[in-house]
Image 1 (cartoon, helix red, strand yellow):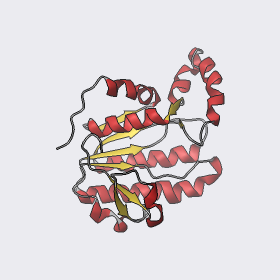
Image 2 (cartoon, helix red, strand yellow):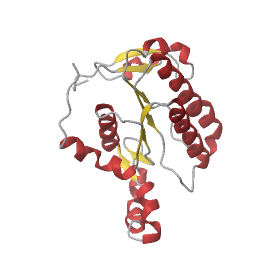
Image 3 (cartoon, one colour):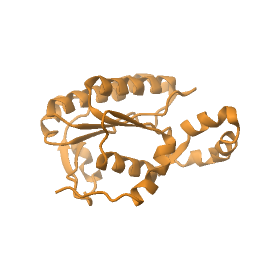
Length: 205
């Protein structure tokens, strides 16, 4: 918004107060495109953020009922609206844990690719932020793993990112649309704030 972009956000009626000031609300249900697809156009970019809160291995059914259904509905709505650029927040992969979650997100990525969008796919593993700070305790383990050659790639791919880094990566994805499909991994997400600081981003008319 402060860069000159008009932002519309899908929201349930009872959650309107949670939207940032200046955001245009679209009342609807993420699992049913009929409730929001008429409000997508004339958007140039569609950002898919819907997913199961606090995903855990035991929530396989929720991954399929929420994460998979919502991306399927979003892709269909974006296609109908003629969206030029699709941004999907997926998850780092491959991974030795959370296999059901990773599998559903991989299916989501496949849906985006099959539709032929210009797309940016962000692949964080765990995002540190309010209510999600316990993982800070794992940082010494990551420090060690990153220095062991056989574990280094995995430690980088499944590393921790901050909420600020994720927001910067999303801003970069919006302001610098991909041609084809771009996969943004944890190391790239971590460096997004530095790239934004050194790049002049044009405001929208």
